[in-house]
Image 1 (cartoon, rainbow, N blue to C red):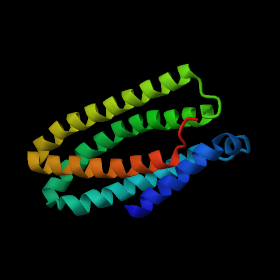
Image 2: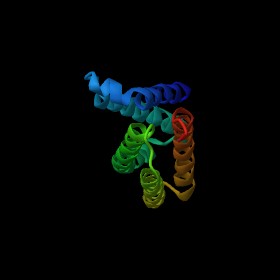
Image 3: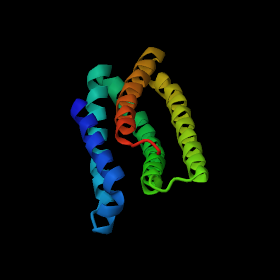
Image 4: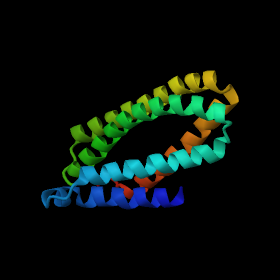
Length: 159
C-alpha cells in the first residue's frame, strides 16, 4: 500500500502543478487517471483479501457486493477528481466565490462518501457478519485516509 500512496502523491503533484501545461501539450491526463485507478483498485483488493481472511463462501458473497460498492465509489471519485482539477485551474486566481464553491463541493463529496459507506456496511453485514463488515469499513477508512493525506500534502494551500 505504501507504493500506491507514493504513486498517488506523484500523480497528484503532476496534475496540480502541470495540469494546464500538460493538457495543452496533448498529454492524456485521462489515461493517467485510469491507470492510477486501476492500480488503486488492484492494491485495494490485495489489501482487503489479506486483511479480511475470507472463507471461499464469504469471498464470493463479499466480492459481489464490493463490485457494486466500487462502482459507486468511482462515481464519487470522479467528483473528487473534477474538484481537484477545478482547484488546480483556479489556484492562481482564486476568488471568494470560487473558494466557497470548492469548499461546498468538498463537503458534498464527503457526505456522499459517508452515505455510501453506511449503505454498504448494511449490505456487507447481511452477507458476512457485522464484525466482518466493520472490519471492511476499518480497512476502507485506512486506505482512504492514507490517500487523502497524500492528496492534502500535495495540494498547495490557497494564497
